[in-house]
Length: 59
Image (cartoon, rainbow, N blue to C red):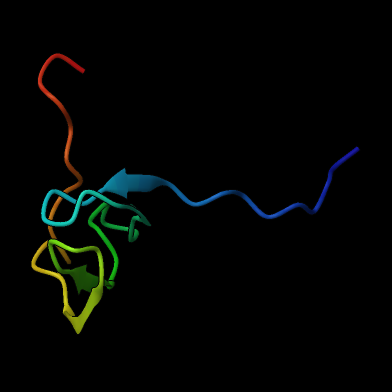
């Protein structure tokens, strides 16, 4: 029997702001706002948008 549950989208860590976001079909980080050092939104596009997700060495 089939279930019609939606699949969870893949996620990855942004190397610019170190937060977790959904990946696009091309496996790149989706659009999100940047963060200041104090943890507040900059209101502008993050520099990590459109880049591959961060993967730690040895992972």
